[in-house]
Length: 296
Image 1: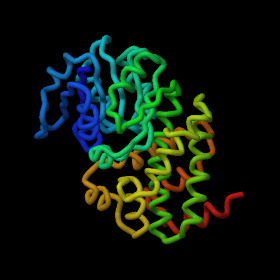
Image 2: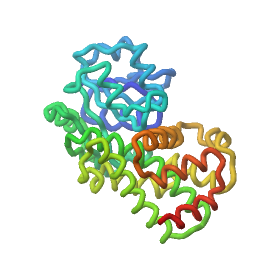
Image 3: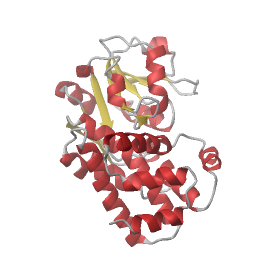
């Protein structure tokens, strides 16, 4: 296949490496990068099959200023919720492209390990099974790509797990132990599924790669930016200082705000996400632990 990748950050460049194993791949970005086959947006726009890997909070504006044709096929590899509109990313893409031309990538996949060619399993979700299979077959041998149709479940799981990962980093930063982290992740998975069920997601999605798989990975390793945000908060660092040290986007910071707002509007019970939101806005992490443990 001939594939164009939009976004040259850590994950975009990792997918560029992976998809280049079997395909002719070109890449572009908002900022110029020294990568082979780095081209302008105008060149990328001529390619039918695209992979969109921009930060979640810039996708809506980017699509508005870089119009794609209705014939483009797009695999979205970003994870998050737009905090301005409180819309899931699939809803935003559907404003610009036909639903049957869209697919969504999910599953546990650190960019650093993909770049090393280490075994990885992902899921391509789409209402168009033929399109999902086309993208799935484009991945290299070291990446097993499954196909599913639970777009909403995959989108919410990919966004929500970043918030639970911040909570997990706080838990470990406070040295609360393995028992506490296991309980947090188990209850976090239940909370993710409860939130997603409200929007029609499938329960099975949260028992597989998109849900439990991605959550356990992101919430238990310093390779995770969101986990490192939690560690920093537990150490008493200011949020802006943490983000400056990361030098990259931690989507969970934005997603926590979106989930807090949506849950309040829709009356969905999200205690862990609520506490992460409160800590990001100045609440003492130790007090959050007490409040979580005292819940009925």
